[in-house]
Image (cartoon, rainbow, N blue to C red):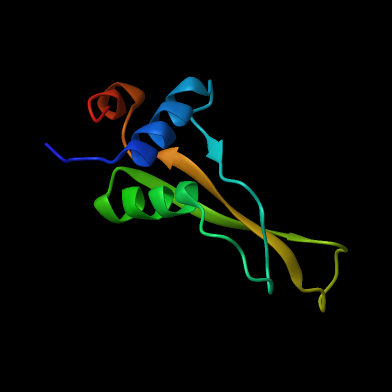
Length: 89
């Protein structure tokens, strides 16, 4: 059995509470010094352990070829079914 810390368990609960099994981490600005976020670290560690899969999303102000991203966040989805994900809590 894999040992999970409190923030990882919270993230799994948030994924399970959502009907679509999807959770978005808080948005963070790009190019600015951000504070340490436990939810981001939990998402990355669960991804490395193979429990969830994450996709990095970015926000651009205007559509076009030369626009840079202003914010970034992760969309977390279970790697397995919800039933198998409940066993980790």
